[in-house]
Length: 339
Image 1 (cartoon, rainbow, N blue to C red):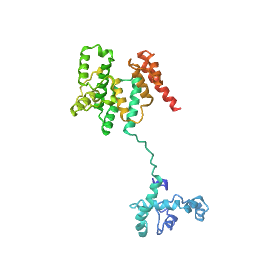
Image 2: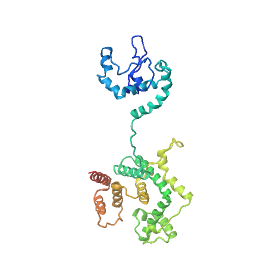
Image 3: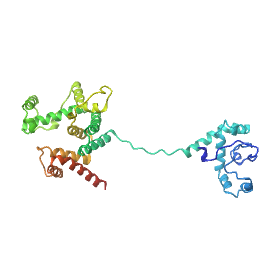
Image 4: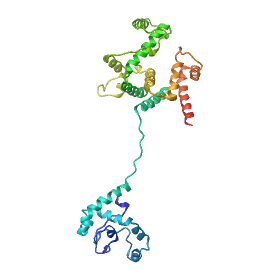
């Protein structure tokens, strides 16, 4: 760091001695003494006359004060070296004062400027995680990677909703039960429900217990409250795959069935939970995922909007190519926004 001002010191010898009254010392009020450090501005003997007379650039530098401060700091920053021991008692007494004065100036010169850092909120992190998970979903990337990213976002949403006095577990039960009972009242349950007598018997039992839900009811009219044990059971079941992919402290030799990992309903829960608390939407990724879901739902009724036009475009594509189309839609819309 001292190399910014002067070359390293070397011990005094019989062949080399500084002037009896070095200019650098006089500039800070020091007593004359022999300096064991050759000044970086002190020229060789042939040009000493020019150096003293002030006709050289070195003299200009000294007159500007840079050489004075460099020499003063050099002497003040090494109290235990021969540089200080050879100095006069008065010079040694002033060394602490010089160190206090000059060191902060050096720090201001060589300390790098602190660069600004970008901070992100929890909700913004959730949005980016969900958008990335949706793109991975449409790219048909590894199901485990998609599940890990989406589960991380869902965990953040759970905490954010709790902080706002909401329960994600209760909302999930409310949405599931409401549409199940309402569609049962309307007679619009999907075929994989109506074709199974055991499922229909269970749906009818639930509908009889929840008689306030009618064919004309709205989701906002229904409120659900869960006991702590039921909420804990919900999260244990929901996080089973995510915990398997995240931890290995208890089940190093454990296994998990891959057919239990279904990222489509997980992403649906995430999108619904995000809309409950976020002031914005999930951008083009959320739009494409919502259109993909509507295109795969035969009960979706078109209203002639631009969204329904996108849904119809997806429906015209074979099911095995719909994800690829949705990903292309996201890329094109994002590119148009960037222009």
